[in-house]
Image (tube, rainbow, N blue to C red; front, side, top):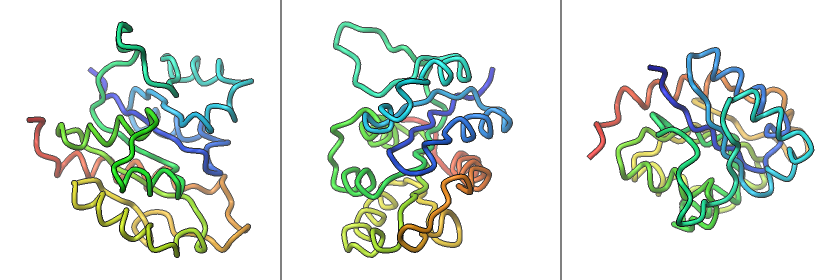
Length: 184
């Protein structure tokens, strides 16, 4: 049986190339289910079928209706990457108004290993809410890959979304799996 990775991507630069992240995770042995924020889904609207074919699963961006069955297999782990400043701060404040935040915010308290790797510039990262959000997520057991251990923020208008460190993010997922207690 193959482990299932929920790759959850926000409207941050590297999501333009989320297919690279999917392929990297597949090469690492994962069955990848892709969840996008509503804004990120808009970026891929004209080419969404490519992502469906690449993953072999529906790409989700909205909560399902109460009478609908889950369209995706159960997650073995979740990687929220790239994570925007907005999503990080909403999640850190406990606001789960999108499926992309709701899934990992619940999963971490159900024993699912959850990793987040941000992608935003230094000016955004300097906002005091960012440090508070990172601390809140870490307190809950989320592995936040930032700085030298993950993504180092770039100067404003100088990031290169093609250089997002997918291998480092996936290594973080494997590391988090080894330290996360079994589901309760």
